[in-house]
Length: 423
Image (cartoon, rainbow, N blue to C red; front, side, top):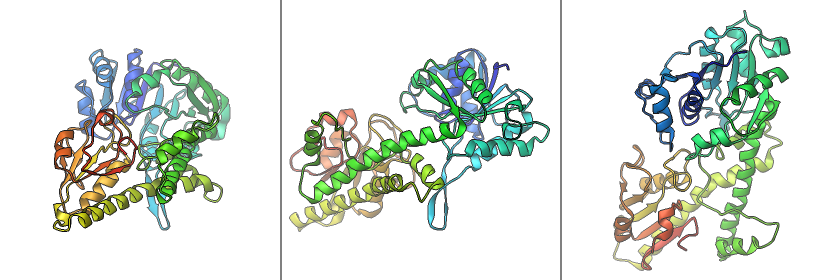
């Protein structure tokens, strides 16, 4: 099996860095995306997403001829699918995994497959998605054999290898992190491991496709459950008039206790999403995982209620003012500290709700972005820290970016601190 040419389908936060890193190893890489703007941007040697170091790697790969982008798949030795797996709503269930992007990518690459090719699904998916991908490929190419029918003797190798990278460190972690590689057969696993060895310095651990799928979901569900404990604890402590931050510091002095820090919810494209894939496949069994998701999903509303209460208290103390006179400053919109990524951000959800309901001025301090997202945030203003503190009546701490930790908060301001850095 040769591994000289690679087609990467999906040029987003995972696909583009992966394509660029592979191309930096002097392998011919064709990136495929339906977004013509993304394709044109990459072919200029630029990038359409924000990720440290990525611009340098992409520019060099394109300039040297190892990477180019297109809207249509081309023949290759390895096909790597890194497309979104969002949810769709059905009656009584808003978290049904939507595999339509994987299906579309599978049917798009099928016409250019040839005997000996390797197809890897990197998209985070519910258990069984790799097998469904193989079935879609087989439907399109009855002239080729696939692992589900021919086992080790199949013409096409199929595997799953979930990404395990941290936004802001993707380029480095794609190389350094261990990879869990699950083939539909042992030979499929070995072929995929040989491919990842081209650019991965971490260990490549081989298993089955279903176990690899479940490994990624398990990692993020474990983190979600632990965060839910901290978030639920913060709600309990608020009701009992206990400082949750002090409580956690004291509890963590136990040698076998390590409680995480509570916050306004859980965001990002993994922890807030992946547990639902387990729940979707085993709804009766995944009781703790479902409850943790519900706790974390409900935390933004709890924060919104605290903001509303703060507005009410301010008006009680200032009877000459109306709600329209109250200025609220939200500190942070990203889903975690010190990045610009707003995907699945509870801070953004909270800010949007405040903008929608509060008649007064809304100021936002987010040092990692240059403009507010369009739509629901249209009536808010992006300002710097000093301007927000000077104008605000109520301050809402949502994301503990490093610059905020040095902030000296005026004692006259009402505060809703979801991160415990100003309280």
